[in-house]
Length: 395
Ligand code: ATP
Ligand code: MG
Image 1 (cartoon, protein in one colour):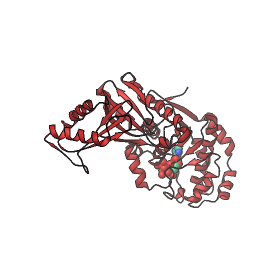
Image 2 (cartoon, rainbow, N blue to C red):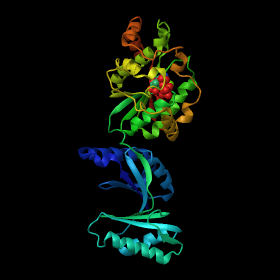
Image 3 (cartoon, rainbow, N blue to C red):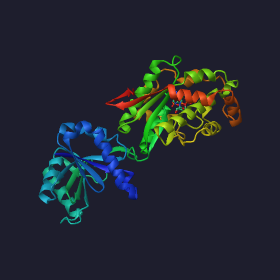
Image 4 (cartoon, protein in one colour):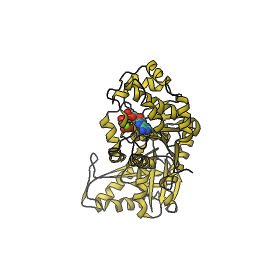
């Protein structure tokens, strides 16, 4: 029977929180693998977790899902055999007989009670292979086949590769945040990076029908769906119809401040909504200096209206680096679909690059902001909950 050995990542460093982190990770793994439940037996160990896979044909699918779960450092498909010299020699030979070229044997002796030293076992395994397979020779520096044997208290673990997984922390150990999700490239990447540090991510999207099209909204649903595999078992997408406010904003005298003020209203609404749904932080895809509205001055003027911390995981990333991640997580092709979101429709010719707080405040005084925000929150936010592979509107 094949087994998957799961190595915990940063978890091993986390002192007292360790048990809570491991339970969360196992809970997340069980959820993501729920459709394979009947084929998996879970075996917890001190530094790792072993999944016994009862149907080998499911192995690849299970391994692919595991690679996207944060908190897992790496995986190996392992054979677990009895800690007996003859059994180990037979199994390692069976594996090596399918290979030609070069090989190397590594032995880790975790169970110090095992009768044979690691050097001695290593030599015996290598000699046995060389005696029986004429197509293979030793190369300790760059072997084609690396055969690792770990002697643990519960058996000899034998494997030939380590598959890199997503690393990070198990989603759910760092609270919950609300990600301002546009249809662009940056905010899905920012959401992904936040999930990587263990924070559950809900989404808030501002749309302005009929200025923006239903396709633009569809894109946002698709993006939230693409990130689903990294997210918690349950999360929501909130869609706020911003049309009424946008209409008011057209009357702002200082046209160059439109974007700044719109951003501040996004953040005000997000703060109020966060109180209702109970999240601890906001997340945006802003990157320092990327566009005129993302200067440090602009960020300061936006932060002023927020009580919650605003996390900006891609703040220090170059656009190219962000694109690279978006390709890796498969959001890129959706993000570049050409549908306008609120901002691109509404951008003034010369947006202010160094906005001043007092100017923004003064412009806002002419708007009935509190009332508009209150009305929008009560009437214009729809909730979609992730259920059975889809975002379903909450009635
Ligand atoms: P993105 O690629 O994420 O759209 P961007 O480089 O286009 O980012 P902006 O359009 O200036 O940057 O937006 C900056 C951030 O503000 C976005 O990353 C996102 O977090 C938030 N944002 C912008 N538009 C919307 C929207 N319509 N709904 C929700 N959040 C938005
Ligand atoms: Mg954008």
